[in-house]
Length: 136
Image (cartoon, rainbow, N blue to C red; front, side, top):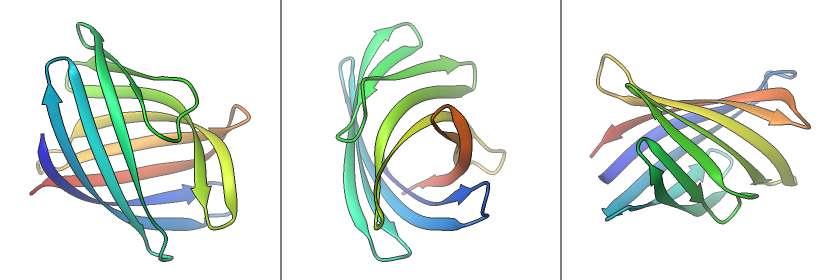
C-alpha cells in the first residue's frame, strides 16, 4: 500500500458544524493481514494516531479492529468499491462519543481515492465524513 495523504471533513448534519483534518496513512500487507496506521492532524490542533489491523475473512471480505473500535469492522469488496461498517468511540476536545460509521471507498475519475461515510448515533444519522486521498 505504501504512503497515502489525504484531507477530510466531518460534518454534523443538524448544525452544519464542520471539523477538518489532514491524515497520512502508512500501510503494509503481509499475507492475509493488512495494517494501516493513520496519523491525523485536525484544524483545531488535536493530533492522533489510529492503527487498523484487517484480516482476510474470505474472498472479498475482511474484518478489522483499531484502538477505538467497539467490536469488529466488517469490510466487503463490491466491484470497484469497498464497504466498511464499524462502531467507534470517537474522541474530540469535548470528550468521547460512541458513533457508528458506514463507509464507502472508491476511486474517483481523477485518480483520488474517496472515502465517504454516514455517521450514526443511537441508530440515527447525525453526520457525514468525506476524506480524499492521493498516493505519495
